[in-house]
Amino acid sequence: MTQYDVIIIGGGAAGFSSGIYTSRRLLKTLILSKDIGGQTALTTEIENYPGVDFADGTALMMKFKEQAEKFGCEFDIDEVVGIKKDGELFLLMTATGKEYVTRSVILAFGMSPKNLDVLGEAKFVGRGVSYCATCDAPLYKGKNVAVVGGGNSALDATEYLGRLAAKVYLIHRRNEFRGDEILEARVRKLKNVELVFESVVTEVVGDDRVRGVRVNHVTTNEQRKIECDGVFVAIGHVVKARWLGDLVDYDAIGHIHANKLSETKTPGLFAAGDVVSGSFKQIATASGEGVSAALRCYQYLTKTTGRLLAPDWDIKKK
Amino acid sequence: MSEITLTSTTFQKEALESKMPVLVDFWAPWCGPCKMMGPVIAEIAVEYKGKVSVGKLNVDDHGDIASRYSVMSIPTLLLFKGGKVVDQWVGVLSKADLKKGIEKHL
Image (cartoon, rainbow over all chains, first blue to last red; front, side, top):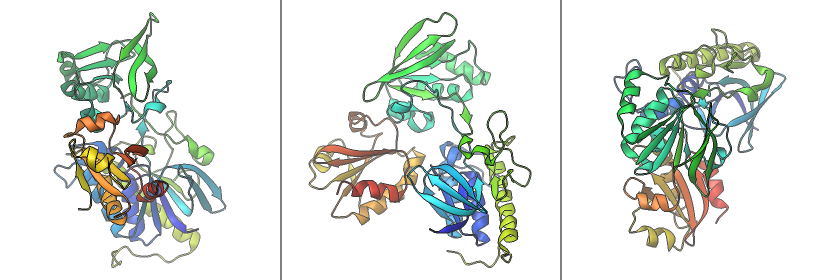
């Protein structure tokens, strides 16, 4: 089995930035990610990444990826689901059943959309249940859809879908929104949007695809079935890191504790970007943290393996 | 380009009545993940030339086909054999995994 110097989990701004730096230091690097570009790739307009006036998220992330690969960084689409520490090595297990051995790991898998955790949700992912309006809304032209949530992402999704779908039900567990007022005002003006307040989704129903949702009123307990072809879940994002077990410490909301040098409590295990407790969730900060983690990881490896320091200039490009 | 561009009018003949298995990539120009899968699909088309034909279907222009096969999220890849869907993949996946999936049906 090939042994890597470092495996980076996550292919977003943090992960690719780490990969650029570790590869340039000639560390044998692999990025394992369940997608390409993470949340950035789902953003259509980026105006705050320094040095780039205006970018499409997908295009920007493809650049990050190409840059890492140019220096020899390997990349594979796969989800890491298990980790074991074996002496100074780490063993990683993936969703497709592959195993990898590495001297160090950088955790940079960011945040994932929060699930509703109701009956039918998992079954209909890709068959009507979506976590990304930007990605899937155009497939619901002229159809009826439900949006679940009450913050900016739910309001955004509702406004976007309102322009395409026949009817949008916005289901929210409170009786007021928690997003920007301007956005709320725009949503309230849309004639084809029905606000379903103080209600929670209890089940997603369908046959070979979504046909509707069952909702429950939180105070009256009254039940209602809403017929729709799609359910857009927009109730926020969470760090799904519990599979790391006790190799790391978590904060109250499940983010990973790492110090300023990106170190977790386990030597050789680093964390960068949105997975880190207190991170700012920006492309530029994630990228910077990815670089810190890479450099600290490099120092760790030179210390533990006794290998000579390789400069990051005058290296051969792939 | 080794991929065929499928439309609502050519779908029956080129995908369903094809003698070879057909891998259909449901995509749209506004879809970022589809753009990322693009190069993989193009490589598959070249590598499997003569064994699997690879078609691209723009869901914006040919929504009727997408809707017929309940494509609600893209990219979606459907593998047709003898006019029937024998396998499907939703979202991005690695070339190795896609090849493994295709090989099962050859």
